[in-house]
Image 1: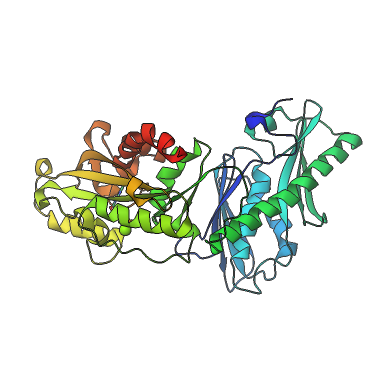
Image 2: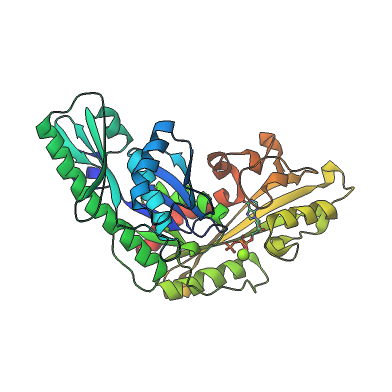
Length: 405
Ligand SMILES: O=c1nc[nH]c2c1ncn2[C@H]1C[C@H](O)[C@@H](COP(=O)(O)OP(=O)(O)OP(=O)(O)O)O1
Ligand SMILES: [Mg+2]
């Protein structure tokens, strides 16, 4: 049987972990395996264990709570797990996401035991490790296993449309045990890469690109573009040890170059930097390169408030504005070969914010053609029309050739 991506029966989909995904919550992780995306955040509390789920069933939540409990060093925790996309193997990935978040708790509060989860599926009489969504749909039976790397089984969950006989069951268990060991290695490798940026652990044969940003809003938009190419992306949040790059340039391009060149020189990886901002016609193009610091510090609410204040009394037809992005792609150690592109989108600054998506000035930036603010669009919709999307389109034809040599 030929699997998607020509995977062997025991091959797992690649894993990508964004450690400390939420700025305000240190023990948080975005865990992605294939198309399955789970966000987990753990907060120490005074009270007893609470596990909250978004986008998952009551049964999945209950299973998770029961499975986690024996691994916890303390029950004074609130765990929140959010399914962003179920691309197969969700139950296992819920566990893996939470487990990763637990490892970010202060010493002594993390998990008592090393464990990982994986799904195995019986498809057309063959046992497959880590089925994707299509394979899961075809599976006659599925096993989700949580175990230690020493093959001590902590939990087993059976699923699928048919009863499983004991020889198939044994095969599934074997397949799953292999997967657990491998998953544990994937997690460990990702963690080491994240905390020790100079040590590159070759975990997958996938290409890695670092996006030189600490802005999770930007990162999300880039991610969906490169994921489609099978390229894994990291952001500066994966490298907390890196120095802060001061944006001392006087143009978007200078600032993007500063970020791209310096980070590429340190990490020895290809680095894509974005410098972007809002240019309001009535304000002579301000805040422009100062968009992030418009109200003093880097604070979206403050920046939006200041923008509204400065446009007090300006009628709708004069509130025209442009979002601009300059992208600089830098190769390690070859700053003279930087690739530079830009993108723009025109809109209007509203008097009252609308919508909860996106980031930055999105709730105030109205796009007449769509009769919506940027914050009323989904990531997919925004990725079709935004300044960043336009810049990426301009990069599209060039970068694949450029990155090869
Ligand atoms: O699509 C966007 N939707 C809304 N607002 C946006 C967008 N794109 C840029 N902006 C605003 C946010 C920030 O106030 C400034 C970017 O400043 P900029 O220095 O490029 O980014 P940043 O400091 O947030 O992150 P980083 O430097 O780590 O990439 O423009
Ligand atoms: Mg910045």
